[in-house]
Every structure is written in structure tokens, then in C-alpha cells.
Length: 204
Ligand SMILES: Nc1ncnc2c1ncn2[C@@H]1O[C@H](COP(=O)(O)OP(=O)(O)O)[C@@H](O)[C@H]1O
Ligand SMILES: Nc1ccn([C@@H]2O[C@H](COP(=O)(O)O)[C@@H](O)[C@H]2O)c(=O)n1
Figure (spheres, protein in one colour):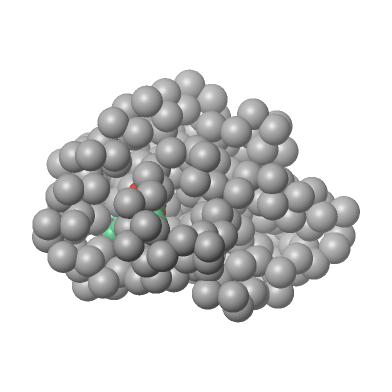
């Protein structure tokens, strides 16, 4: 199994990059684990309390479960990946049965901050986009897809997201094998990653 970790700040385009990589690859050969699925279960908190969580700090992630799932997949076992709701700020209670694949991609803002998880990645990728670009994308996405408004996104950006990005996420570039500049769509970089995956799948 080839395990690829894809990190980078919110709005840099991780999900988009993953989807672009998957386009044109044979269906069912590459599996995805999203860090978002592994936000801590916060069922014991009220909605009001959940809105105050710092979702950009490593402690908001259930790394123990994410690591256990990745190791299980590597052993050839399937896992039940939790489904997360950005509207409820919590896991929904549903899970997605995730099967082991020849190539597994793990994507998320904080996945390179956890040393044990980092060791499991054969290739570490950091997707870079400038912070103004990321904020613009995040505003548009969170308002249209994640049930937020302008004030929520800007307050979160100023209070937690920006300082956490500087403290925990940006420094992870140091561990990256590949940095993808993604202020604009970067099909050359996508093609390179796809070639590496195709090699693993024995298609070249
Ligand atoms: N290279 C790009 N150029 C312009 N918009 C982009 C680019 N990559 C992603 N986007 C858009 O920005 C938003 C956030 O992208 P997404 O892939 O969800 O980022 P991430 O997963 O890193 O938070 C989405 O609406 C997406 O369509
Ligand atoms: N309930 C939540 C949980 C997380 N976030 C934000 O999501 C960002 C990470 O996801 P990306 O797809 O953007 O990489 C992170 O910056 C959290 O602030 C949230 O808003 N609400």
C-alpha cells in the first residue's frame, strides 16, 4: 500500500487536488481518509459550546482513531470512517465503510503535525496558496456549503484560524516531500502525483 498525506491550510485546495488526482484514475483503486471525519466526538457538548471549539488546533482531532484506522487499512482490514457535519460541528453518527486500497490518500490541515501519523506516510505533500486567496475561498465555500455567514468566518479566521495556521500548519512544510503551488489550478503538479500513483498501480 502507498500512503500519501496531503496537508495545507484551509482553502488551499486539498479536497480539490484530491478530486483532480482521482479524475482519470481507475475507480476504486485509491481510497481517501479525510481528517475532517476525525474531529473529536463532541456529543456531550451543547451546540453553543461546540461553536466555541478551536477547530484549527491539533487537540481537536482524534488522531488516535485516525492512526488506528490507517494502520488497520494497511493490514488489509476495512474501517468505518465517521461522517462529520460542519453545520452541527459534530459527527453525524453515520459512518462510511472504507476499504483498503493499493493507494490511500489522507488529507487535512493538521495531518503532518502528528509525528506517529507522519511516519505512516510514504509521500508527504503540502498544498500552498496565499492566505488572502485561502480566506476568499473559505468565505465563499463556508457560506455556500457549510452554513456559515460572513461574521462567523471572519471571527474564526482572526481568533483561531490565522494564529493556528502560523503556529501549527505552515511550519509543516518542512516535512513535505512535494509542495504544490495552488494559487491557480496546477494541472502539471496534479499530473506528476497521478503518475506516481499510476506507477504504484502498475499502469505505466
Ligand atoms: N486552485 C484553485 N483556484 C481557485 N479556486 C480553488 C482552487 N482550489 C480550490 N478552489 C476552491 O476553493 C474552495 C476551497 O477548496 P477546497 O478544495 O475545499 O480546499 P481545502 O480542502 O484545502 O479546504 C472550493 O470552493 C474550491 O472550489
Ligand atoms: N465544525 C467545524 C470543524 C472545522 N472547521 C474548519 O474547517 C477547517 C478545516 O477543513 P478544510 O476542509 O477547510 O481543510 C478548519 O480551518 C476549521 O476551522 C469549522 O469551521 N467547523
